[in-house]
Every structure is written in structure tokens, then in C-alpha cells.
Length: 103
Image 1 (tube, rainbow, N blue to C red):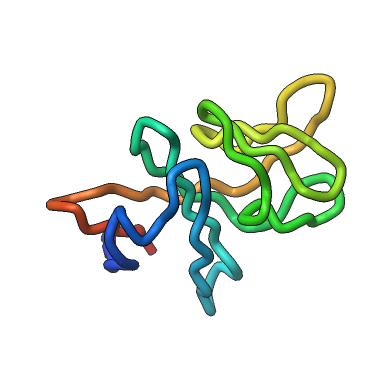
Image 2 (image 1 turned 90 degrees about the vertical axis):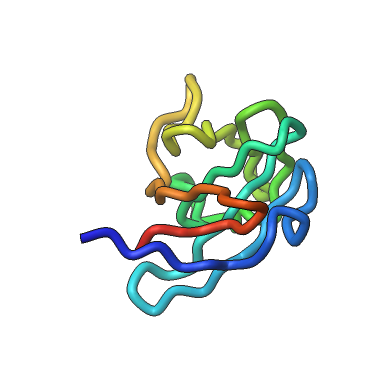
């Protein structure tokens, strides 16, 4: 059964930025906002060396890891070629301006 928890408003996440959510069950989760106000959630750990994706640069529907520049797709968490690996993806949605994360 899905459990959606409110984590703030859309305006709490900067455009082309992220907000960090602490989760006892899943570790840190980065919630990203694109320039088009789309919202995505990934585990806050690059598959390469564990860099904090929440501190990376968001562009289009991707984020660049701040440590070594790996590009991770926000839609599925998969590293873009030539890099390989995946950051865990979490379901997230916006309802009436409120951002909800599925746990």
C-alpha cells in the first residue's frame, strides 16, 4: 500500500535545484525541481563515488554530480553513457502546490 507524505511546497524547492529529505528507511533522498516545475526524487548518492546529487547542477531532466560530473537522468536515475550505474528512484507528485513523496 502506498503512503504519500508531504515534504513541503513546490516553492520550497528552488528551480534547477534540490531539497534534501532525510529518511530513516531509505537514507537521504534528493527531490529535484526542473525549470519547467517538474519534480523528481532520487537517492542522494551518485552511483560512481557516492557524491551528493542534491548539490549537483540540474539541467533539463538531468543532474550533474558535484564530485566528478557524472550525468544522472532524473526520470529513472540511470547514469548517461559512457558512465554506468543507477541511483534509486522514488515516486513523487505535486498536488495543489504540495510536494508528496511515496514511502
